[in-house]
Length: 428
Image (cartoon, rainbow, N blue to C red):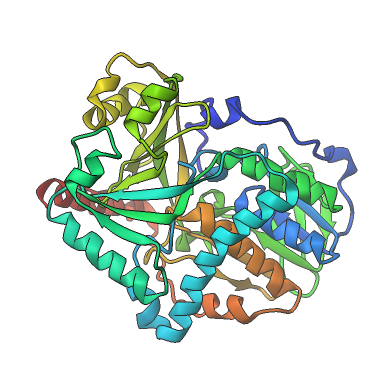
């Protein structure tokens, strides 16, 4: 399992709508149709779809609902995939790459539909700015817009530095790509709404209940750390960066990478509006990105940095403060009220890894920074596959993934690689 040294109080937990009434561990059943490991976006999405299709489902998580990246991310609802579509096209051809892109687009609509169907209060707002950190980056943003148009997106436009200055209270950027069909929300409240829906449809969720081992094959089951075993017909493994050694053979396909987030004290509507006039989510164009947005209670939520080394800043708030002030120096008097970190799961090629292991273990992970949309949608696809509809699942399962190197060189090699990209950001 990934270390829990970043388990500080988060803005999301402090502003959660309410606690979900989950099941007591003493009531763990002996048998269900499907066991789901992980109560984040992937696992909750799969569980909800399965309960709606009439399956009996039990969800297990070693922490509370949304404890991992689901309740720690920037809340940004992005389009597509972090490396673009070239990798999909090379491996799958254009037609199947288009299927993968459409899945990501469907993920946005799935969020909207679930919010409406289950009455989830999570501050959903549409609008997204890819801000150019260097003048030369505008060329890359123009190329990115062309790729989006190639795959059917027609809701984007390029903004000059003068046009961006009307929207963003910062002199740090040199223009932007405005994406009208991407946005942001309170990610933990959305996850808690999904959990409520799972329970309302007959599913059971067991928080703070660690799974010690799993068995696939023709008689799948899991064993809890308490010693209790639960039999099932299929298993969904939805642990992402927190997978650890639970499923042999999968751990080297996903790498935990730490990222850090702060949230300011409330700024008030006027001061917040002077930072981001139209309340878009913002992400810069560097390889090691800064990303930020306003919250429903008029704070600035700001994320950035990353660590492959497993070594984290002693004081996250102090560490992140200079990054915030570089973009918004006018916030010099503002307190960083919350500071936390968490781990995202990345793959070697930054494409999501979904498939089936040992006949009955279904998994999806490695969303590489795009998990707010992709995790929920791929969780649904896992549920569809278990219920016999494998069309989308089969396309993603064809994507080849190289393992990360193992042993003592794993983190040092990746840390050196990230240093290379940081230098590129400085020099580009």
